[in-house]
Image (cartoon, rainbow, N blue to C red; front, side, top):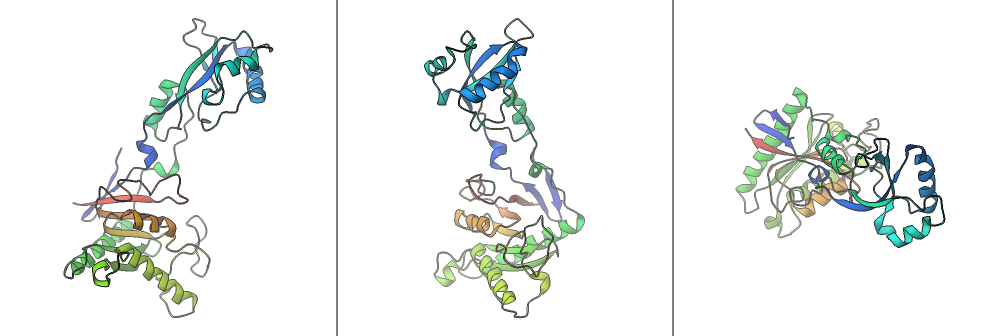
Length: 308
């Protein structure tokens, strides 16, 4: 469910993470009908003699057998079919106390549920565990933070208006620091002016932050309130610490949704949040959900901002 937050002239909406939009995918597993007293013994046998469950740790190993007529019966997952076929399974159990087990093939969810709605849907197929991710908590902004967000967005829009008067593409970016509610850097697109295809607004803004860090580390005068955080957000913040990632924890405010190249640059820079006004169907967020891609080593929260 989308949550909208009013920030002055803008209505801010969090963009769903990729996992929130995943469809139910299932895979086949072997299960056996057992009596409750057999549970611990057959789980020990499966742990020693059968392939371990791989990637489906969210699937509950045992559930009540509602179709057997005997309400005390249980169904237990033995192993995944992709690692063992029926003849191989029979060969493993034929000379054991489990040789006469009734074995079936059923489907279970391949991926863990990410939302409560998915949890309810997944559980209809086979019981699964569910732990609500902390990042799905409804975003809440203080009044000061809302003013800060509006100010940064307005600055980006004004910078875009100035860029429109030149031959450059009309896009602009502002980077802000939540702790001080101040702007760290701002830049517009200069690809045409510079005749350089990589001079997108976000790339220019990251370069400005890098220049500021070079100046800071070489002891040149710099406004302490605008220095880049050098530790991860969960650690005590200290502007004098060095050795962190460029732009780590900063907020990025863009007029247009970043392209794939710029989105990856934001991932590498370890930003905290991204806000943008104009959506792109080929953007790094809308099309590829790069802000929450599991294969990448950093994720951030992205918001689309609508003019009220």
